[in-house]
Image 1 (cartoon, rainbow, N blue to C red):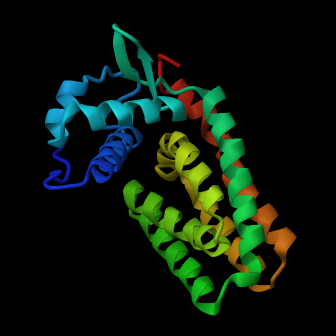
Image 2: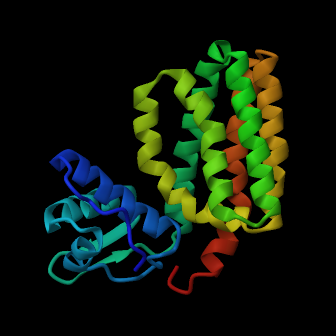
Length: 225
């Protein structure tokens, strides 16, 4: 296993949150493969924490669909499931549509510049075949509107459901399919700048719904799906 940042001296709540994020990210980036068994004692040793925050993290991950458990038998990374991913996609797309709708009139010139800068980094990452950088830049792009929406409930929902799509995004952004997202991002920024609330919101939704094209590719690559 790769070595995560050492836990060190942290509060219980921070330990719990960090354990969740580290395990979630390892699932999303493929460190833990679909169908792989997870042992809480091994995870605790890997993270340098007690088993309690690991168990709490696995419980959260099960609720979001990234982990499956059978008490007394196993805990494993969920196989890629097109049905679960489509459900998460619908919710995530709706939340980003709402974020843009609520944010358009609040976006400043600096916000729009930040979106363009993130899209430039996104395009550069795609050209370099750097999937991690592409996902980070995509997060930054969409995060501008999410932050400007000033809607904490929206952010909570995205925190739960977005990770389910991350595995799909890795496929999209490692293929030519991801190139179309650059143009979609440019359209979202242009519509936001024009203060076209409905147009920008619809474009944001369309961007997330465009992941449709990789569902079959992703599940076909996983023999357990």
